Amino acid sequence: MEIIVADQIIMGLIFNAGDAKQHIYQALNLAKKGEFDKCQAEIDLADNALLEAHNLQTQFLAQEASGNKSEITALFVHSQDHLMTSITEINLIKEIIDLRQELSQK
Image 1: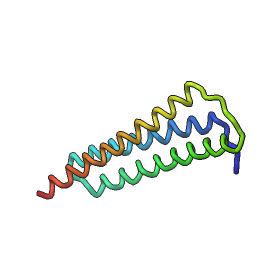
Image 2: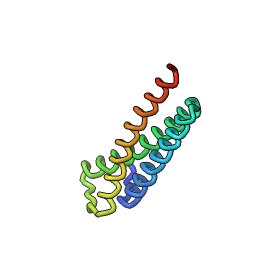
Image 3: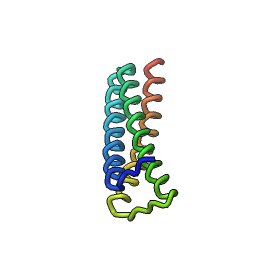
């Protein structure tokens, strides 16, 4: 396994979580317009960015589990907060989009 320094992981988490959030809000804006096909493409991009962030987090945890300890900094804590709030927002926005789609079909 390639060792990735903590700063690379932290910045990757922040970048990918932010990217995921940007895509899910774009999906919501498209859903408001009734453009559900385009909306799904943005949801897919959000899911892919979130997966990448999760993979980075898993690499960090695997490195620590294998004995390569890293200092827990305020920036690392911030990256975790950013990731967790992105996950929550994405889940809620997907539900809102589903509701909008259901209402548009009635």
